[in-house]
Amino acid sequence: MADERAKRRLAAIAVADVVGYSRLMEADETGTLAALRERRKTVLEPIVRDHEGRIVKVMGDGVLVEFASAVNAVKAALELQEKMAEANTLLSEDRRIVLRIGINLGDIIGEGSDVYGDGVNIAARLETLAEPGGICVSAKVRDETHGRLELAFEDIGEQQLKNIANPVRVFRVAACAVSSAAVGPSLSLPDKPSIAVLPFTNMSGDPEQQYFSDGITEDIITELSRSRSLFVIARNSSFQYRDKGVDVRRVARDLGVRYVVEGSVRKMGSRIRITAQLIDAVPGNHLWSERFDRGIKELFDVQDELTQTIVATVAGRLEDAEIRMAANKRTDSLPAYDCLLRGIQHLRGYGPDDNRLARELFEQAVALDPRYALAHAYLALALLVENHYGGASDSIKQRALDIATAAVRLDPRDSRCHTFLGQVYRFRDEYDLAISHLERGVALNPNDAIGIVHLAGVLGVSGRAEEGIELLHRAIRLDPYLNFFWGTLALCLYPLRRYEEALVASQKIGPTKSPWQMAREAACLAQLGRLDEARAKAAEVLRRKPRAEMPHYRYPADAEHLREGLLKAGLPE
Image (cartoon, rainbow, N blue to C red; front, side, top):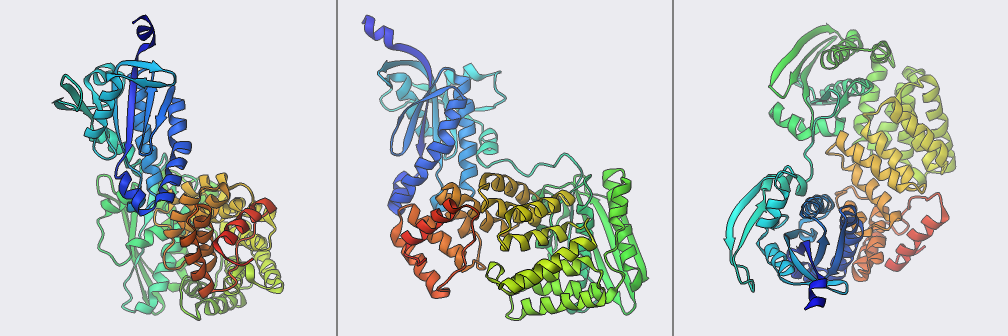
């Protein structure tokens, strides 16, 4: 008896169990086991360590953890549900790993590294009462944490638990507490004025003029983005609402902003009418509205006036430098501006001739105004796009470099000029220069989500993938609908050997997925041991393009790691 008493101690025991474990194993045994190992290493173990706990045992579908205090056990459980949910956002629903957790405070018996007794058994039974993604605790845990944690508990009464002699009073951690953890944080308002500019409506009665109203909207977004006083949602996410009847307050909630700008454009011969209104979406009040009836030659003045008024209204002030930036006219040639807008429209298209037409329109813009920096920058980019980026010939890459360098020389304050020059350097494998110009572009326009993603991509192939992933989280906040994000995330995850996450990210790219992105999926599957799937994916790659151009890595070890995965999948060198 003395030995048994010596082994007894009071402890908080948490038991977690995977919901639908048998289903997951039946669907993909190898992938499920690999994912569980990854979650234990990257999620469970750090949380237990941070909250001074000890993992007692790991079962196939669950885990038993001992804590010295009930407070630490509950805090760890909440964080665990939060981190598991964050990891699940990258997974299709049928692959998500969801936990139930039960926590009890009671007497346990230690034997070696294992523990036994009613204190453990009650925790295991409480887990079965929890909702998927939820937490159930005993009355002892609730009493111990009451007043020490800002939590609400739902009393579900006394429960007769299997193989436990006396009924146990059970509480659920309130759904609001768990859901805020399990679902992950909603898009909270940034710490500076936040704004989304919705696509201005084309009121010209001519669908062919849509590019013009889109271009004006995009210019306003770009000029607002230059202001460090504002948090500006990127074009891609704002344009998700084009041609839709929208509730401004719903848009603000979706995008996590306070202010919304909407308006319209009507082009009538040599005249233009632009209307705009600024709305504080929290109370739903109109802060400002204006109508501009001007000659078409005054278009740039109207854009400047709009931008300055919006910044001054929502930020409360305009620094002199911001005023100068907003007033910076990139061209005085309306025909050159029109060519630029048409070229951008084609560059974003997927028609067979779009890339060529875009390049020709940018060449026309440069011919009309040889000092138009942005036209030079887009022309350099179009040359790369038309010639398959890194697959372009050396002469094309040199021409793109000369043109992009001229763009930066003409306007060193335009972030896009630096961003496009950085891309040219990337596809020339000049990594330091690429990073330097991409960082300069982001510094000039911290709201440029696409520029941030391009920088993350270069970091991903330059041995700095973790930094790249941090930047990607910043980009997705600026542009919640940024599909471009997923391919770059997969690019950064692969060299970190986070294959499951890389695979899921790649699967979210959508129908525009390139052969080399599919080849990386095959490599991920092979590295996970899913060889049949890997070979099927490799065969699909070979059908589409026998020699898919893969991204170049700066360091041989990273290149060899990718080569290893491709060879395992059955792809030729």
